[in-house]
Image 1: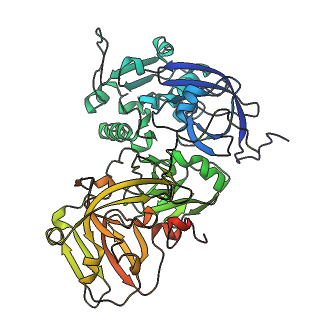
Image 2: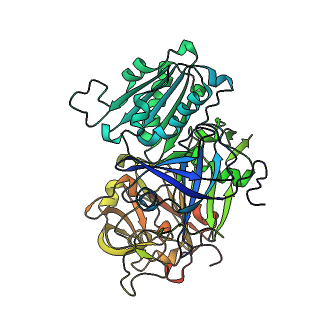
Length: 250
Length: 86
Length: 200
């Protein structure tokens, strides 16, 4: 009976924290045990619900950091004045439980089996907006796709880059390009400013190749980057956007 | 279309609530504004999460398309600002 | 039954000074800004405050408004979402001054604002030193994200009644619900009786 899902309906499931990975001083990945998980697509998110022992509940949404078929994982950035993120990034231990419902999202999704999954892929991440894009990259690897792929990842400084070691050895056909907007290591030769029209022009796949773009991050970042892509000639319907709250602004 | 202010989200943020309401995934659904007719994916609508409730607005004319309010644990929703949703 | 998430609790709440804080509230030093729509940016040259529905319409330009007698007040404010902020300092024009400029015979108003927000109030709750149109907060011009150039300030009711970006009042015979009231919030909103939702 438990976990019987009516098609299209969401139910809250109990998730158990299986392991945690501290990605940066303020960002942690939680790998979850979800025995009744029905599967997900790259780019989707889930909702979590925490319950205190006085019955107080808080709900939040997090992008799924794992590819389809991998253990479900979320990557959480700590907001100093947050109510949930300090708990998830500092207090949570293996074995702790909370509720999850998902997967959610039918728009910000990359599906290798559909036409949009076979064209050049441009991923643009602002800060923690890299999380769903990492799921897309892992799914691309999982299915052995060879679509030309570029990730432009904007972060404030090198210490705040999430999934660093993974991106250090990308799959064939994947390029990861960083821009560090506030501080750069002494020997840095990469971009060192906020994403702008000139940078987009250098990094984006030519419009003639009919690429698709996924932009994720704080609203300011998404608004500017999406506008730049459209100004470059990307049809608006080929630019998919997901806006996070005003945190971790690159 | 003027840019959204920092902190304003999009329809992806109400994905779970819409599945609860409609019984199916809705962020890719297309909604038309009842005032200006602009059609967009729900995921591309402007979502204002306030402490009193969630207000979804047309990107072009700012018309209120949807409002979600939780009253004593029950979510009430108003969709009158939409001309259509499919 | 939801499983308890070990060690999770609501954010730290400051102690309430006895008697000053209505039931169900906690005291905060923050001043959250979460708006229901884009921030209006009306140029002062185009700004007016009007009272409609009296025997003749009354309207003040920004310059005229600034020339009206003003007061600086320190009040506690209470949000329906349970936070209270004590000793907030505002400067503005009392609604007593504004309503005295109009001849009218109506028990209710609908406050209207740039951006389309509305809220309803009894006239009686705007008089007697209970309400202001405030244009300065904490000694500085009211910032746009907090409702500037001017907002309604009615501290004895829940703070959603203190409408941001207020542009005027429409005097009415009936008490018709404004924006949040239409979606289930209380028509009056007395924090001391915890009138958060319709029916409370």
